[in-house]
Every structure is written in C-alpha cells, then in structure tokens.
Image 1 (cartoon, helix red, strand yellow):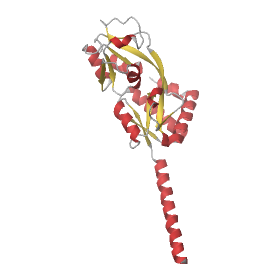
Image 2: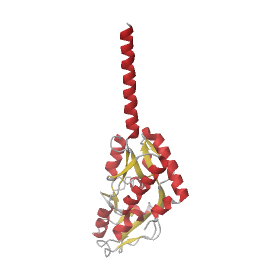
Image 3: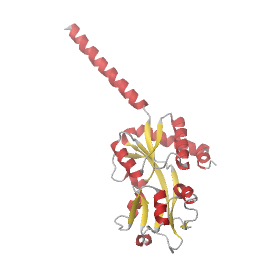
Image 4: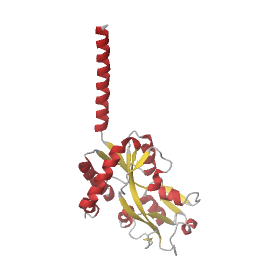
Length: 242
C-alpha cells in the first residue's frame, strides 16, 4: 500500500509539473495582433515599431501581422491564430463578449470623404450621404454602423480598390482616414484621377486595440506601456518619423 500510495503521489506530482510547464510555455508564446494594412505600407511599419516599443516597455511579446479586416475579425473571434487587433473603433466590441478593449486609444483619426471632382457635396454628415453609392472596405465597423441597411453600399477588399471604383465612377464616395489613404491618392495611379478629399472631416474617432478576454493581463500591460510611450515622447517620434 505504501508503494502504491507513493506511486500515485508521484504520478500526481508529475501531472502537476507537466501542467505547469505547459502553462509556462503558453504564457511565453508571442501573441499575434492583426492590422489590416499591407506589411510594406508605411502605416504598418510605424505600427510595428510602436508595438515593438510597447513590448520592450511592458516586457511582453506581441507580433504584428497583416490580414484583411473581415478575415481578421473572424480569426480574432476564434482565438487560435489571432489574439488581438491593433486598430478598431469602440463600436467594434459590440456583440463580442469575448473581447476586452485597451482603454488608452492607439490613435485618434479624422474620417474624411473622397469623391471625384464632378460630384458636388454641399454638406458632410452621414445622413446626407445616404443618397450616394458608398464604396468601403469590407469589415469597416463605422461604415457598417452608420450606413446600416443602406442599399448603395459597395463592399471591396482594400482602399486602393475603392479608389479605383471612384476613378471609374462606379461609386460616388469613399469614407476613410488620410492615415490610410494619403499615400494611395498621391501615387502615380491616382495623381490625375480627379479624386478629391472633402476639406472638412466628417468625424473624428478614437481607435483602440482589442484583446481576447483570456489575455486581460497582457491588455493591461499594453495599455500602461502605451500611456508611458505617449508621455515620454516615443509615441510622437514614431508617428512623426520622416
């Protein structure tokens, strides 16, 4: 009986050690945070640098990866390959109980209207824009929110595709942020396209990062590090980097 009891205790101890090792390995694994911009884009490069600085400050390990918005949303819900998303508006959390929001916004951006020169838009508000054919990137939360049930929505896969629809007059307007679109509009393809930006922003929105709720501690560390980087000037130096 003594031998049996000892054996059982050893087995239990080994199982506990195994579980502890597995837990430690899981905690040490890097999390994947998604940003729906191409890896070679300037915005992705700056966001990646910011995440790296947050990693250093918070002693965490997050990899920034690129993935289309709608697919990223699905992968985040599954919590297998993607555990966090870098930049979404606050409404992104609606009906997603498995997500937690980083309280400090990652950035604040203006939403502006883009249209071709022959389209004369007198005023800028979401209600007045419902008369137009609106091009948008599939998975863009604020479009799906403010233009819900709008019959003239054209869902596309990227901002550049949306600009091509505008240039071909297959859509009337695109609503986006200069942060995402300025390099596209100034490119050779669209330099003489006749597309213009409405001078007054339609709205300013705070953009946040979200984590799967299983990573609450990491989200808090991310939040605290982001605040520190904003206070010490590192955040501004990354955004204003030439």
